[in-house]
Length: 133
Image (cartoon, rainbow, N blue to C red; front, side, top):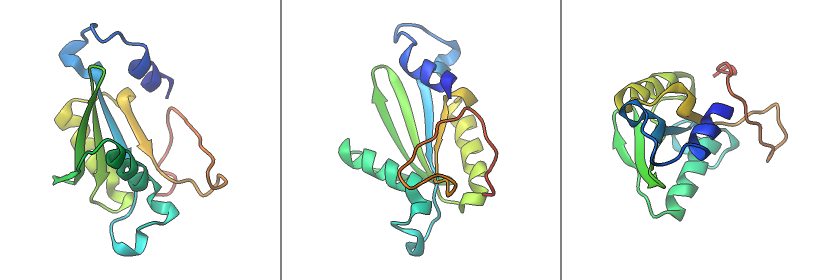
């Protein structure tokens, strides 16, 4: 997580990394597809990205393995992904978009729920497992 935040906030916009990979970020909102999951805690990743897109007047487009929107800010490109797979298969979509857009792992942020935390609590960590998903 520290590397993600460092890349996001501390890199000068005039620095050039190989193929500008340090200027690309993939933000993944996890959730499950289907009306029965809409507005549930399990879909918080989708909800966060939808809220941000609405605030910035952005529209997601359905593409391979998910809904995507690109957002440019201060010389950086943020690729926001809502996978169209069930949560336990979302790694396929994340891997595809990381490779397609040449986004390094340290520039990936995944937003998901964690039933082990009280509702509304936030935890940032650099690495983790699938948490049973």
